[in-house]
Length: 84
Image 1 (cartoon, rainbow, N blue to C red):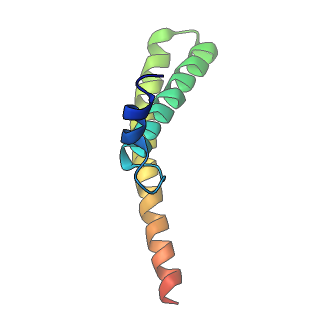
Image 2: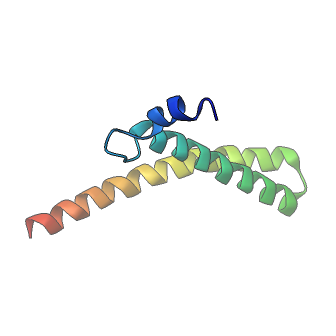
């Protein structure tokens, strides 16, 4: 509770909206949860921890790239709609 207010300043701007750092931290934490989920599921399917870790490491890179291209496509789509 003592650290609540100083830490809150990092995550919320003066208008009360989420800061960029909060969005970044949430993105990293969500990707971490997703990758751990993929590793656990891969382990249950394959029964091999080495294979599960390999799948998880490929998945984290591929999902970051897919998300980037997804965002760029949405950026182009929204610009086309604004011009029309």
